[in-house]
Image (cartoon, rainbow, N blue to C red; front, top):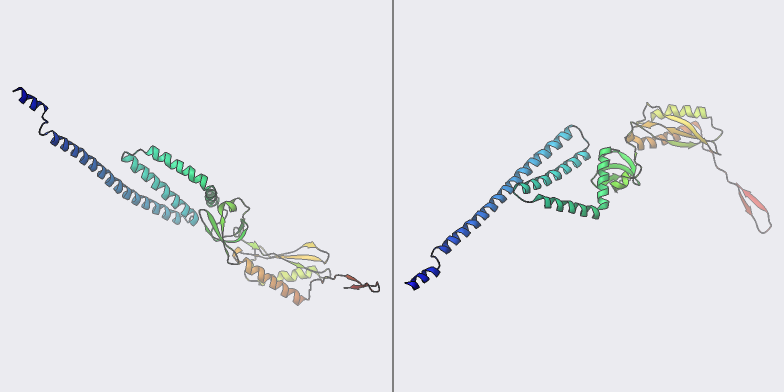
Length: 297
């Protein structure tokens, strides 16, 4: 009897292992089900959030274009808004499903500092590009002189500005170089003066010549009537007075008006019999054989 009791005491209960397996399997299944549900919810939330972000970005883009905002500013605004909304969406999903977002934010800040230290030059160009868009010293299509380049702006990018010169050469200039330099905008004003200078002799009747040029300059295509062409003596050299001819034109017609004005001035002076002074140089030639000097004009 005693041996039977001891055997029953130390014998493993017949259903103990089955209960343990059932309990373990239940916990594992519950954990897996919770993970699957969270992943499914995260994917659905990400898809829904991306759709909302796309709708919001398209709405902002449409509104800005309706208000006739500069295309460069629209591109900057849409890109920045898309990045910020996507970061906010990821952080919100992680926080909603129980993930610690503080560590993620710290890692993101650390990565930002590392990228900023490594790409200091690029970030300077990016910051300068933002200020170029905000301050608006020029826009796409304007002819400018900045950063050692003169030409027409074809694109204001996030890091560089594309400028096409009159020789059809494309230049990519860093935004920071442009922003830190003097910027000349030839397209900002309503008109631009096409200035040419003419060297005349002392024997020329200035009053008659000026009146003759004033009468002929309006014949040049695209010369504006208001303001009227300016013709004045800007200086006096040792050969005679220097005349400056400056008709006004729209900035887009500057090259054509300048060329046609020069042709018109040459034609007018030739018909009137006005010639430029001839420079005479006296040269003394010394012959070593007889010691005589000869002057040649």
